[in-house]
Image (cartoon, rainbow, N blue to C red; front, side, top):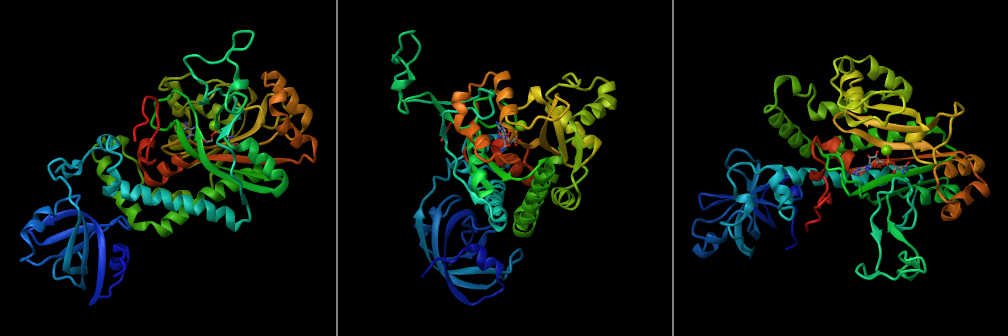
Length: 476
Ligand code: 4AD
Ligand code: MG
């Protein structure tokens, strides 16, 4: 018989029909009641087996073991579930060494501990919920752009350019590193490398996406991104996923409108489609908050927070206004900030979080940053000091989106590249977009894991990606 998903059995009130279910044992009580989970949803199905089931088989029904069960769906006699399965056949697919099984622990295992067993953490309720929500978000991203008529453009993972100019790249090479070929000056000769030049993993698909926007008008990328920044924080990964829409004819205001609509759409999608997982994550957060002192607990539950962000416009301020607010803040006056505040600084996470969590208490879009702290491609404002950048800051996260209107004027772009010592030869193909029918255009990048963090209420970015890569860690 074809396998029925546990989700479908639990979602229906129907009884008295035969099914086959397959999954992993979550618990086994009184040699009779199996809680079986197949990952299709949070809930387990209760399977009742005959008391005269083969003793050898019963011995192997332990937490973590995999089973295939034929039986009849019946109305449950017990509390806690509407329906259960009365088993007629139980087949052991894979036994599980109960003594060594790390999820056997009586106490709730810590998130840190679970990170070390990433191959098994999917089987916990928390990670089950997180990764089902992550899936939904990925699906909703494609749906949002598809419904709007954007073209999904696959930008390269191996590239020769450093889009952000931050020099945080992982090199891609097949040269022997103990004895690489040298040129006449003794430098490593990348002409002999696989691609005949020096290459790295991409830090952003934006520059290539801009080429697509110059033909399709509206494109987006959604792919892995790699940054060798040595930041061991709860919000940085060395390998993360980014969504980068790029739209011809959009200015900075259209860009902000699109980003806000996009984020609200994603939140609504998850509220509508992942309620069971969100309710579980919300309760997890309540339990976690109980460990904190009263004044550090958040005022809103997870679902309320998401509904609030869905139903309220984001605040929009300029960088200059943001700095003024920080300078006027009690936190600044009481010297609570670790980093200095003055016009020109690259705001630190503590500053961003003050703005969203303490001052505005909602997401904030900050525009018009000093040009010296932003990438070369951003459109220069008439003041000569700032660029048409926009960052979206989210409560509990800080920066979740970074974007800008692009510099579409060839000369201005060339002048900025020269100031920043970016050789034109390397980006001739990018500059060509400004030579052959340039148009005003804008785009942004949403850090996918930061969005998953925000929606799930998790606090460490390592807990929202299946296999985190961080400095000194690439296990699995
Ligand atoms: O602000 P960033 O660096 O912007 C860009 O890469 C632009 N090319 C985007 C564009 O305009 N098309 O990165 C965009 C977002 C950040 O706001 C953040 O959410 C996320 O990517 N991000 C990271 N997420 C996890 N780990 C890291 N190390 C990240 N670095 C950036
Ligand atoms: Mg940024």
